[in-house]
Length: 295
Image (cartoon, rainbow, N blue to C red):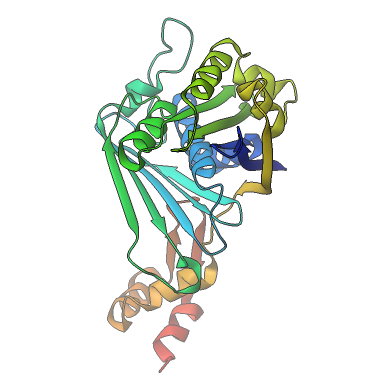
């Protein structure tokens, strides 16, 4: 089971989060059948969204949305307080050749555009105050750098964000996935920031460490070096959608009886595919008749 931890470091002047998301990204790939480069991009967005939402309370929701002019066109990820995340890309088969260093050209398929973060409190229990929406232009398309750029420009939090996905040619295509997020709070010491930057510069490659069995706490130790830290919370994380047959039934019912009657007469049924998880729900003739007969 994938895990996420969050805590504080350097006498609570630094906020820290780390996660292993290998199975989470594998499930996203299975559902959306993404190309290798899109897998790298979507996996980073899912992981970054979980890290950014690490302290979400129950029933809260955090959405990260990328709208861009690259061939992927856009990416959306949504995390809940209980560790569930879901997401999709507009063009799952977008692809570009590997870069000269052998890495995936994520920046190429992202292109230019906007990076949005939407925070909603109490969404899952019907308490829906106005959401907080922050946005910045896409900084690089690297995803990790874009999360850090957003935090600095929109929330005034200097941050380091490391996101890694490693793939192989055969199933399961995702060898490992995970990430670390370090946020410098206003009370933090500049010397601590310099120490963390130097540690990150000389640490082993993130994906190599995850593939070799590193835990989220191991990732924090690698990133912080000699700086003390305290873990405040831990949760299991996974790719899971909140769609269901019941929700599909309600949505089709909401189209109105005229539209439902046409579906019954012309198609003898109806189907609906969830964009977030690619699950398809089918309503047969009896289901449509039940909608038409309802008061």
